[in-house]
Image: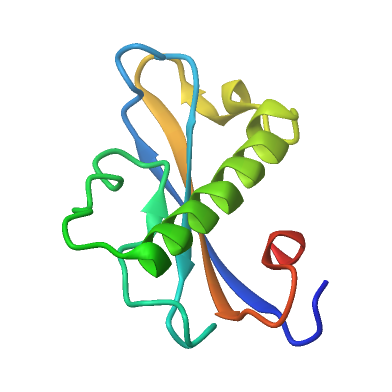
Length: 123
């Protein structure tokens, strides 16, 4: 990790009805927030998320640093998603409480507090 890089996380779980197209799978949502206190180049922006309707933030008036911040957030988000879900660290079928009725939805929110080095390794 980079010297001084700090990331905090918040994990929550709730019981919800399953998605109609995947009734026998639980849900896992990830959110990455590069806060302005992490680096002076980061602007206050909406966190990037794999959850529904969270990626619809407006890009109107964005400049190069905003695009870099969004690309970095997306890169971190996709890397974590690949490791946890595609890599098999978490089986979404194991999150089913009652098939077709209740599943667990996990939300993992990462916030970069200090970008002192390789953020991707710290996450």
